[in-house]
Amino acid sequence: MIPCPRCGEPNPVPAPGTKGRCPKCSAVIEPPRMKQDDDDDDGGSYGLVEAQVEEKKVEGPKKKEKKLIIKVRRRSIGDLEQWGSVNFGMTMVTAGVCFWGLAQALYGLYLFLGLVQGPEYARPVAEFLLQQVDEPLEVGAHEPTNRIAFIVAMVGGSDFHGVNVGILVASQICGWIQTGCWIFAYILMMRGAPDAYGAKGQALTLIIFSAINQLVYFIFVFLPIIGAFGYTMVPLIGPEMASADFNMERRVPLQVFWSGMPMMEVFLSLMFILIRYLEPIFIGIYIRSCARAMKDPYLEQNAIGYQKLGFGLLYIVVCYFILSLAGTSPVMVKVLRVLYALWFGFLVGFIVRTALVCGALKEALEPHLKPED
Image (cartoon, rainbow, N blue to C red; front, side, top):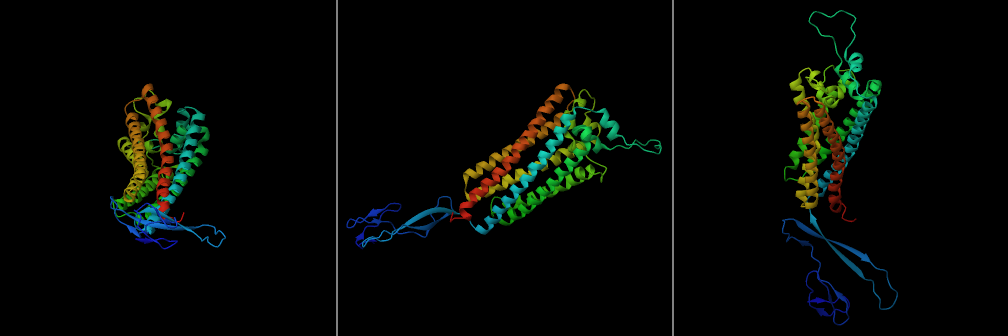
């Protein structure tokens, strides 16, 4: 039995989740509030959060102030301080995505200037590839070449060579800022990762991938662009050469012909590009692990869809590189142009989806980190 809150008349205890009324004074009777409910089928726990909303007092001799009890069932996800580190890590990842998108936009401007210039081959070779020397060459020595300047002039246009160098340098600087944001985020993500589903190992893998990507693009892209390092891998910095008009009907594709060690450079360039895109895919794997730890099926499906998009992008890149070695017929070059357009389009969508899936994890964590809202 439970006493009536108004008249004190004993009444039967209402069933859980229902309310009763006092037969004497018609007051609403609620079942006793429970502190903890542990009968969750999935093994999680729920807490009862109570909030009291005070109603306006109504003046009168018999009117009393009423209090409304609101009960909210919320799953416990563990240490909220650790999840707070994950939440802030997702914020830093999103900030890095903004710089990633800016770098890709600058690279798109570089390609657009090449379209404005139009196809050309002889002028980039004469003005940028072959270097003038004052002294006669020794017997057996080849004429010095500047392959990076040749690639930039051929892809971005000879008339815009100086502008294109500035654009590529700015794009690389955006990549540095992106890497800094992401490595800081990965440290936070590893610190707050749940002790399940390999989340800590995934965060460590992300740190390794990010360090490899930064080192590779600094040595083989940035330093050659500014003239501080004379060697670069042609397929890495100029994969667009395979779809150029002047690559048609050639015995050896341009990106292979101008490579110092064709087999190694093509293979390593493909591996480095795949590692570059595997990094954000692993962010999706980490988010999926967090979703499983939180028992959030919607977030888990969102992360799985993001991973599928990333692996689809990798498949397009592999197809492009393999077909670029298969021939140089006009039909093949047109197929490569279609694949490159798909590559660029999927990459733009992948960047946007990265920000969205990070926002989805933050949204799922917000009710737990800020229950008062």
